[in-house]
Image 1: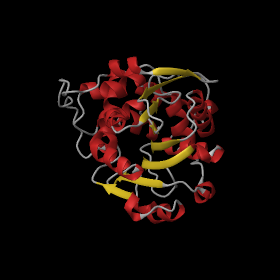
Image 2 (image 1 turned 30 degrees about the vertical axis):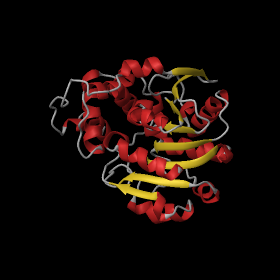
Image 3 (image 1 turned 90 degrees about the vertical axis):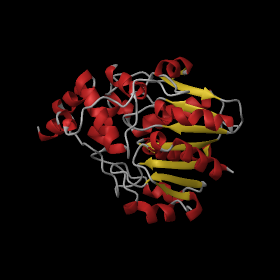
Length: 310
């Protein structure tokens, strides 16, 4: 019951003042326009929505985590396309605009990886630069375990790698309490509180306006919590160990990490990560930000990615 109280009530331990602005910033993408631009891929488990922008043979895939979607990368897509890249941004099954089928193991790391490979195959993309965030790292490690030749370059943005530094905000056991928490995330008031707390904890300064939050809130209000249920009840309690596979990788890798992240701490894993992924100091960047660096420092992240690819 204590975990349920944390999930349902603990999010209220902060100011509930409205988001700073209801006015769109100049050039701001709306969630409606973002969704209208998404294409769809029918996987064996359900339909996956994704952005596919740019015509270049140089491809970058931007992979979100939990509880976000491709919306997380909206500020980075155009700048990357403008520099001559084709950018693919999927909503993984159970998130964003993608389907949310019933089932439990359907949301396992292995199945997410299978669907991601199938999506890229359907687009006739044989090799790409792979950027991942949060739980997207686990889906990526599984993908690399299956077919490492698909990824030409690897960019880690505050992602899950080892047990060291992994501090999820909540962990649940399967059952009533976890299901109730997932239901609460779909319930307007609690959804708002959860997102306010998430971004308060995950950003140095929460300057998101209502349109920004709409892109995170809408999927939750639409019931997209089954993938989250698996993550919080399975992954958070029994983190998959990809250590042996990671040591064998031979892929040029860069790290861009918000150094003040309280969910994924960089210091406990920094030296191990450099050694096992053979990352040079020049490709290891700790920036002044927390967890959601795509929201806090999108220009910096884009520049560092482009510098790495050059």
